[in-house]
Length: 126
Image (cartoon, rainbow, N blue to C red; front, side, top):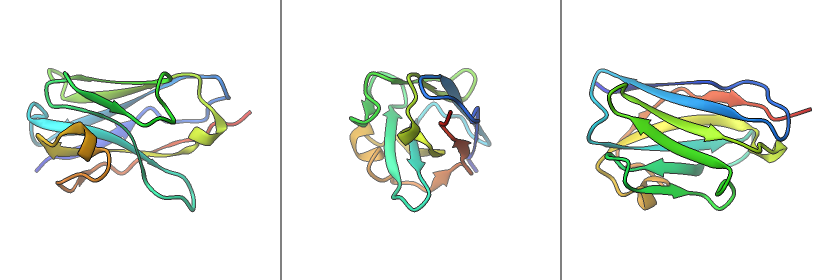
């Protein structure tokens, strides 16, 4: 059974950077597309960025385009989200999700499968 664990969150000042990690166990990620999602208190879940199983295709929400970068290292069974130029409105709990070979454009709307991590908090505040 595939399990996902997010890490790397924490308090950061506006303009700062963080790198989130999504580490998988129980199965190889080689055939899974991975998405990063976020949900602020009282807000709806938003697909932030998604990456295909081989890393050739990526998707970014307009709100993070040019500031966030998604990448993956299948040898380490891990997907990363590099977040730069963070803004207070990026404050959320960030989750990763996996879906078997799902196109990134649809994955970032709703994953086909139900593999989710428990989330990592990212407060952006001075």
